[in-house]
Image 1 (cartoon, rainbow, N blue to C red):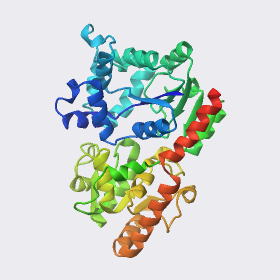
Image 2: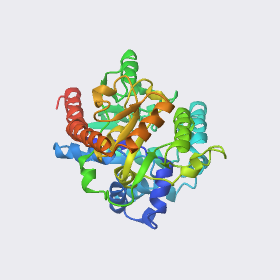
Image 3: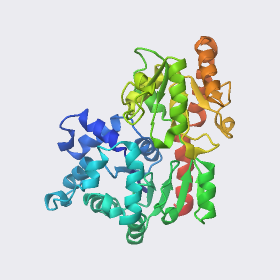
Image 4: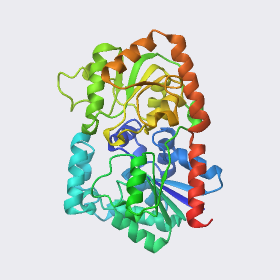
Length: 394
């Protein structure tokens, strides 16, 4: 089958990627694509590797990466509207790269719901994406950007190109998103699967994963970190911020996040902040950590689902995660990961394991073995491959 994987990158990641690689924005498409792949950020390329291993003609597109998308258009002989349209970068699109995540997460959905998706997208966005669908002629579109592409565009594209549209999401679903356009929805959150089923959308529970290839592509040597957290600290993470602020006063915590400028001036996290960490940098920080703290976003509710579960255990580090109803379906608490059910319990758990190296190492090793045996992209790709075949008849 021809499989096209659609992804949407964080604007701050894109800023970091191109700032870290001067001149990359003007490079040919394949050069930019290779640098993006080497960053190890996100899930797109890990899925691609597995789909290709199963014989599929798989391609990945990062729909909101303007530099990469325009390079694709130029290198494939398609028209670049930037050359003839001075409005190719909308005012809001430029604002999005500068505003804090807490503003964007509230501002953009409001404008989308009142003025339409076209208002908040630069003119090249749907123009080039439409050209890519025409060029690749996919049998399956695996949409990891459910909250980043308009339902109207996807419905029209399906009618014109006749592909199976499979969505995946385990993050807050904005009210303006209409998942009904998808033929099948997948999620690592059971309540999302139930919600889609109630709406009459065929749905399947698909957990997130870790790629074994990461172990050969990172350097775990270097300075060790006693206690780390790597992740977002936006307005969607109020409980997480409260937890980490308490930890900052009790344990030797280091924090990597897109930013902390939105936190109060008195927040102890400002003193723990180490900067941003994306992809490879994140994996190496996790691998060099004695204890990694995980805390789920509020939308996860009572379920364990996020990527950090698998990324931390996958690189062989000791994970302390919030206790969830289904956690023992993923890992054995106390044997493969450590858990906490309150802020105070988290402090006590971290302090205990910092003082018990052998116990900590045994749990970290067991957690890694569980992930490498059950929670890899190879396992997930087998599940998705069967799903694609079931609905396409291939």
